[in-house]
Length: 207
Image (cartoon, rainbow, N blue to C red; front, side, top):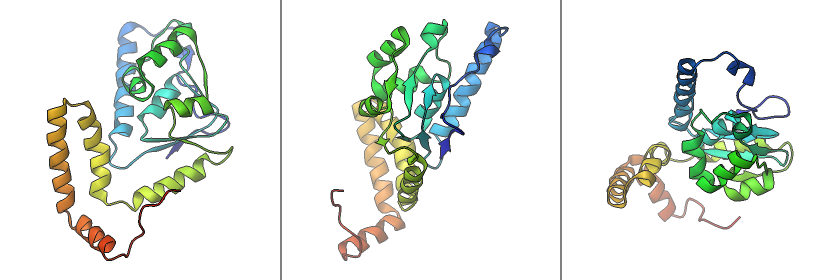
């Protein structure tokens, strides 16, 4: 789980760092953050972000690298790079459009639009919207649920699903079939299926 200290998740880059940075340093710095956020996105375990207050600029890019985002009512989302004369450099142009669409990201950067927690959650900035002060509790609750999954299933969701979604349909379908076959053949899966068929586990019900 990742979260901010104090009242905000993250406001992103300290703009004072840009006063003397040249083009080469800027490129190296951007690619460094690409590697950092890739480590989060392609982590072997799911990463949950608990969001409150400012989730802007690089902070939003960081949140986008997480697999699940839980927002409190105080959270707000923005990309002020457009008004600062700069451009996103932490992978936001790749990850954020996959969550909210290119048009909304363009609007944010061109106009400085700020999304509230309620509006942002409905558009995909966060999957969960909770009461004030409850984000970390909800994140831990979700983490406990995920930890009860079969490890191979979690691996497939984290590593295979994003690649399948980006592949052409025929390649994606083949990858899905292979991953499904591997998962179904695992001893853990066999045991869980037996438990379900023997009525030892609960059925899916609406919450």
